[in-house]
Length: 117
Length: 310
Image (tube, rainbow over all chains, first blue to last red; front, side):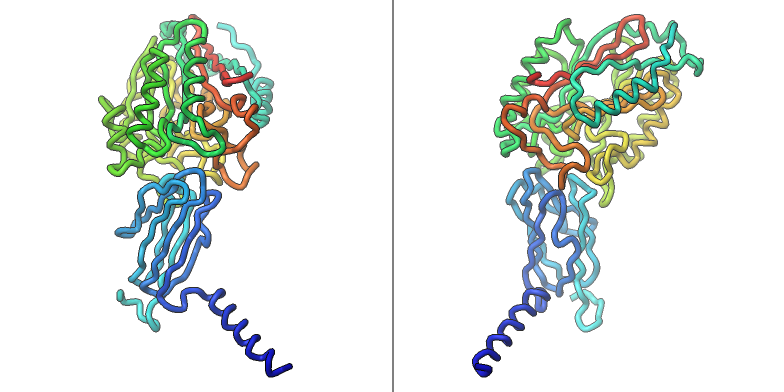
């Protein structure tokens, strides 16, 4: 019985690691817009990660920031916008229509280096 | 001039009605406490009695469950406007004419609103400046003779009207925003005016802080209101929050109009300020227009909010 159970547990652990720490590699993540809020509001990613925002509200929202290129058109219901973060650093953004909605993407430096990729 | 000392009780009533959200008829004394002694009555009385209308937040193009037929309810609002006794002098529209700044949405608004057969003075809402060219369509249609993204002033029947734009260049974490250029223009616009001239300021987002958690206020609104302190009768008309709210502070009456498209929840009563879905037979009791009257020879201003359905 033990011999059979052990691999199952290991697989379970592996799956949960993937869930808890999604950006183990440069990947893709999604930030949803629901009820006038970005979820997750603050997220840390590896360089090269493509972030996609999708608006689930009945009201248009947009992504605005002081970062070159990190600015979307107005996103109507179910529309999305993607941006690939290549440079380490903290990138704050907000909704261009409802600026009290804020969020941030922190792009990790590669092995302690803060230099752009 | 007799001044009735009805302030506290009136305010209390207004406060209760405001938060219950059930106000249908408002009559507000916009006069000045006599003790201030800054009123030049003779000049103030040059303001002849007249009525103008306010509509707001038509959101042409909105088709979500909270109101799949925003065109239909705007048509009903205009029908209401035409039924108001006495010919109003003109209409103001406090923004969010369109939902997504599409040419077709502005066209629909124009087709319907022109049925009122009144001059309309517009200011933009944040929904009106989100076309590809960020405001080009709005400015082509409504921006003639204005500055920035559409601010301006005009005089009518002795009353000075100022239309402000507080939906441009918004700052992360902030609220509505007027900006230094517009504020400097406003200060200059008011310079040299008699303190007894009634002033009406209109803008999309409330200039007073209604509920910052939902962005319902203007970051530099206090500065604009500072320029108005010396005036005896100031009325501030806004939209954006899709419900009637009123506050009287000194000589300033703040008032927000209903939307003609969909209601929004009272502050803090829902997870977000998004469109509020109500029972079909209730929708028209939460949409409407306002008419504002300056009565001849009285330093009084009356705001009457009319819903599409009693």
